[in-house]
Image (cartoon, rainbow, N blue to C red; front, side, top):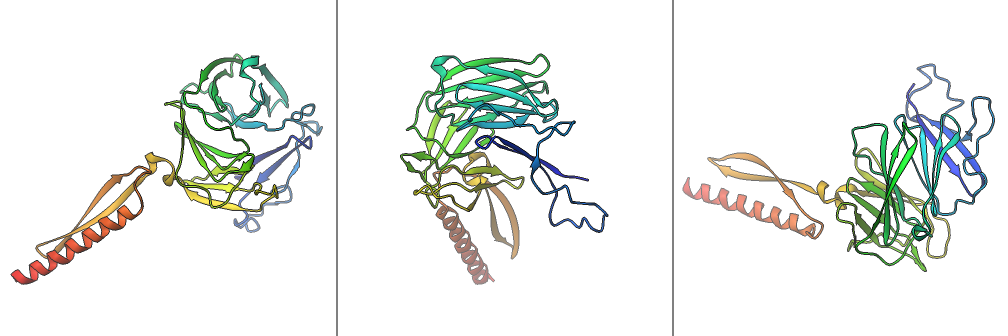
Length: 302
């Protein structure tokens, strides 16, 4: 049976839960599959049914975490100036690292796995703050890490409590908090090591939400808090291609009348974020006008 294993670490409440999630629309009854232990949160326990609590003795306020490893069995955790690795199979921490004092992060903007290596035992990650960044290379076989500290060339106004996703060489940030909740969308380029702000904004000011990239390249921003710090039950959906220039491909259909037969030509246009959607409409008007004029010209000749 195919299911998704979900891990929910409630650091503030000192609770760690797990769920085996199956598609609620699948016809499980016809397959004779019992779903009593699926699609519900249960305590995370070891092989002896002892409850496991990750980060039991820490507050973990503002923590960032991500699952990785050669078998997706490692939980990488960044908290302030602490970096830890928890083995989900062995049920214990296998590594703890304290960064030097000058790299103390009051708020870690994001913690992301940016693997680009063929070696499955080597994992690359970054921890990003407003004006500094740490590149981390973890060797799973020898359980060692190498850290490189890099200053960010262009710092931004401090904000935190945002949703974010990692896309190839970029990290997108949605909303956040800086005395007031923000509607802004930021982008950080890992390769160029600079910040930028989109002209477009969120429909509402939002902080403490979560962003998820789906398989069909939709970005889902879920939950968060409004300006009055009220919890929101909200789901914002947007297309990845609107924010990632490598995905901004427009397929234009040009129809030209030659000898009273239409030849369809597919032409791809790579457009940047500065090009407005009206540009597409203008092209369509030109194409339609050209087609009409061509038809009238052919009729006059006939």
